[in-house]
Length: 211
Image (cartoon, rainbow, N blue to C red):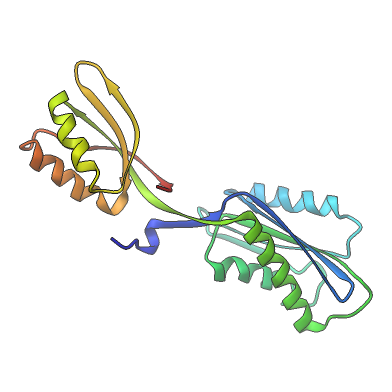
């Protein structure tokens, strides 16, 4: 079953760094996964402090939950720095990320086209170094069943994209599972079929995860 865009979440796995020198100007790209604007701003300020002697510290970030998008050219000609960095985030399709590109001027003017290419390359390299990953939306749920039903249910699980989070054994068996969100209703229907309507999955939450 193909995944719909709303069931996918693409972001950065962690932090990344990339350095490129163009016509004696050094561009240092830094990328990081963040989920709150405060964290993005803190990261930008950290890089600015680290490279306080640099001519420019350009940045862009996108936060998914609050639909927040910000960027800054930090003194570069409008549209030649912050927007190219932001375009890397948008066009590559990831979110919850901040990228800062520091430039140490080398004495040679690059022109608008040269600046766009340089900032794009530094941002792209930093994002790739941080590793772009895509997660799928999973529905978390629990199933309480008898030991006999447990074997039937475990058998059916192999035909679905299910992650086993845990099993509690006592007088009954409690399965703690997660399934790709679009498959939840189909699995619940299958549970009802194999247990003559006695057992249903109880949804307990949702998350983005990888198999």
